[in-house]
Amino acid sequence: MYWECAHEVADPGFEKEAWISSTLLSFGPCGFSIRSDATIIYCAADDAPGIAKMPTGPVSSDAAIITSLFVSSQRCGRGLESVLLDTAIMDLLQREFDAVEAFGYHDFGETADDEIFYESTDVGTQGPGIEELFKSTSSEFFVDVNFEIARHFLGIRPDHIGLLPVSILQGAGFEIVQDHPVTPRLRLELPPAHDLLSAAAVEDLVAKALA
Image (cartoon, rainbow, N blue to C red; front, side):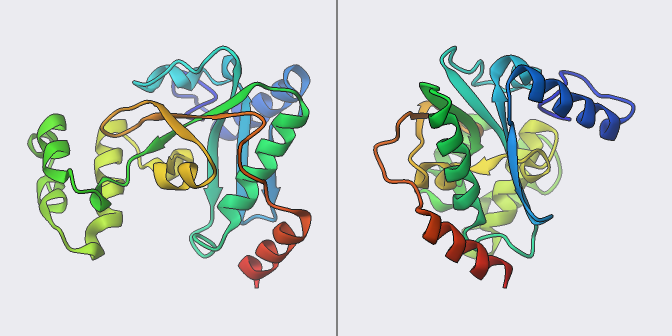
């Protein structure tokens, strides 16, 4: 319920069901799932008060927002992210939205500006283990670095709220419109300049991912 409520709730399951029911009435279809392995959620900005928690909010007035994309750990990196992003983009395009936006988190472990990032965010002074993870240049630590810095900044692991790495969003055509050391906001103008996945490509990717 990170995105659906601006505060903690006593019964997240109940509140999530209530939010989906309300959003279906006010906004229309607000997500897709591939079995129990992957889910994407999107809505109007007014339906996601959790946006107020993000330093790069609010979302532009002409855009829908992709709040979250979850893929099970067994299926990550097999193409389901692309399938769901393109499916959501196609739906929003057909509903004549001007744009879609999303928040992401930087894959800063893979950039050349790690030291600049480290100094600008001062993450090393806030919590055990962060500085050691960040200063490591070994590729085996990159995922841990990404998760730990974003978790430290947000107060929760980014994958637990469906936040995607910036690289995945950029691969789908999104561009950064408001940068931030950890959680930038990205935007995709509709219709997108790139071709979306064909039905045959979607079917092939899903079949391979679930094999």
